[in-house]
Figure 1 (cartoon, rainbow, N blue to C red):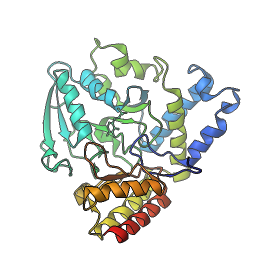
Figure 2: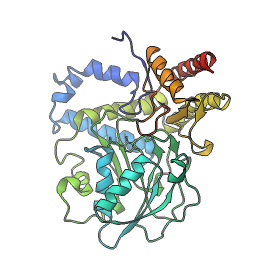
Figure 3: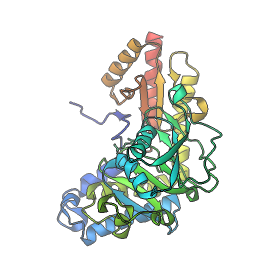
Figure 4: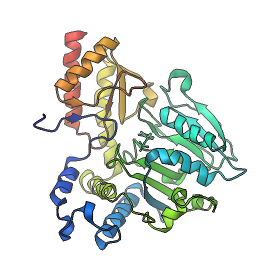
Length: 362
Ligand SMILES: *Cc1c(COP(=O)(O)O)cnc(C)c1O
């Protein structure tokens, strides 16, 4: 049994800011003088209304969203969005462009195909095991949207900047990098993110959707699978994931009041990622797997000289209180997920550990 908290490099669910966890703990038995836990309060109460509305207001301020954007909190994870997007936006005669940059994009594409929708995969980095973000993509001007995955959690790549789609709205899966940097939101018709990587616990998916996208939605969809059902009811058509929304509210408060906004968050994330990438650039022992211009600031994927050394590295890392450094089971190798909440000290400690391991085994 651990006596204290470890250095948490989990890919998701992942570490949350310590002050957020402490505030949850402090208010857990008696939320805001209600005499109840946030997990025991009606979602129709004033207490919860204040929570969800503050979470939305803070999200809008942080991302500089105007009133044409709606912030929703849905269930079913980011994976549910893979089918909801084509169901809602690709009525008969419509097509969409998809860019395939890894495991999650592939799943999104598959769901659209299962539904029999007409989509074009306009670019893919599968030829080199998704180790880069494709460039100079030709998009179709008649596409209803362009779907991308802004950060590829498993392969360790990230769009450094977003493509020029000539006015076609982008829909981005930002599960693993939402709120990690400022955005030019005008390019996006929709942004979605399972909360459990960067902004909260599992069980809630943040969906940011623009008015013009809502107009594309056919009437004959099941209520729960239709965005307008949720936008009409402020995400309270049915019982929302209350605890998750509350945690998101606190994370947004931390981003605004402690970090000081997304420009600061981005600088902090760049600094943390540079500690790892710069160290590996100077080492013949560790090798980052993604192309330099496509490397993720959130998920740093790397290999050691042999699989046996990787196994030993993971084993010793656990003994030294580092968690989550094993690469995804589908790709092997190692991965350090360094989301917004990862303290710089944890990354410093990891680099020290890597240096020591190299000295003994290199
Ligand atoms: C984790 C992840 C998902 C899946 O999220 P769920 O909430 O588990 O459905 C989808 N896309 C990306 C980019 C992810 O990192």
